[in-house]
Image 1 (cartoon, one colour):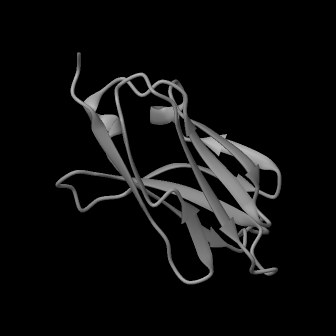
Image 2 (image 1 turned 180 degrees about the horizontal axis):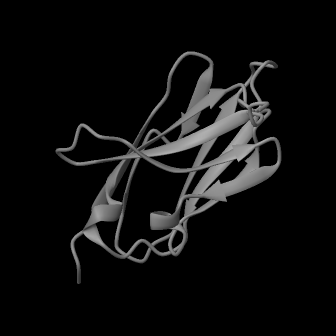
Length: 118
């Protein structure tokens, strides 16, 4: 049987994540919840930091009620919720050791851009 892997999460200021840490066997579902109460924020981002790495990768985000999962994670990660208060990172069947990592969420005001006038 493959060795268990661990998943840790961090939280900052007005953002709370749960659970704080968990250990799962490959193939066991992972769900991490993120909540915030800042009424100015309407976006929640999910990041992954692999063991021994200083870089953090954007897994995906919820902006208002629209969800986006970045291309490298589309086949094995899901993001749900609403950016105004709650989001969930879901890994239905983690299968590789690289899924064991520190995951954290951040909340912010969505930044929208318009094309410059010519």
